[in-house]
Image 1 (cartoon, rainbow, N blue to C red):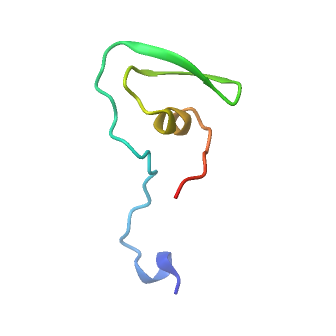
Image 2: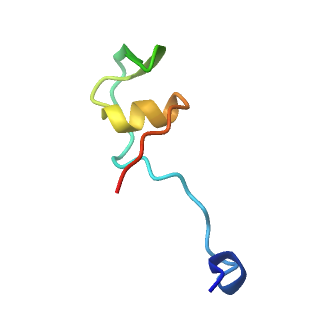
Image 3: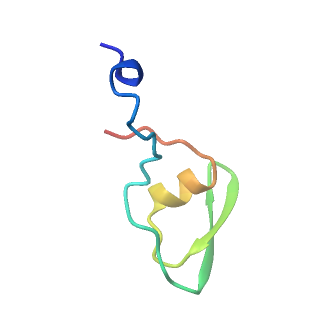
Length: 58
């Protein structure tokens, strides 16, 4: 079974794990040596993905 061929209408989306934070205040954290600035309340998984750091997940 080839998912893309069998279901061409499916949209590929990045799974950030949590909804985007609507906070105005931003925080900066470091993931794998990269400084990432995100809205306060953002999960570490989402911050990493937004910063281009892929973390394996189930």
